[in-house]
Image (tube, rainbow, N blue to C red; front, side, top):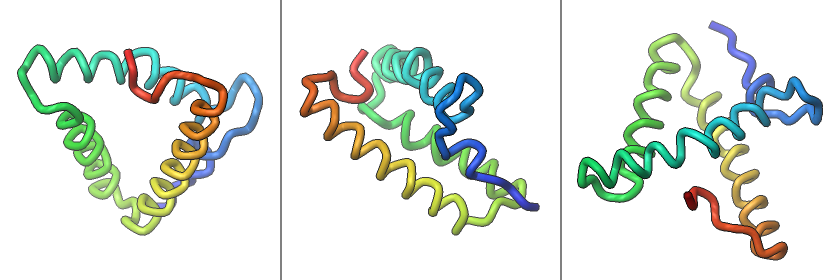
Length: 99
């Protein structure tokens, strides 16, 4: 089953950028909610992030997306996140995931 990661990983720089919209929704809603759920259920920090992400990636595998494609996309996303963290440090911004 062909799957185009570029559509969801690459930034297009316009208002219809799926990568930007997904990042915005994640930062505004998912990250604070996950943190609150971990606290309210007395779970270790990042436990829902790891298991939630792996569960969603598992769905992609079940639907026929190749593991190597997922790993390549994740590597690119992690590289982007690391660059953003470094930029935020230089500019004095908050760390990722701080709610």
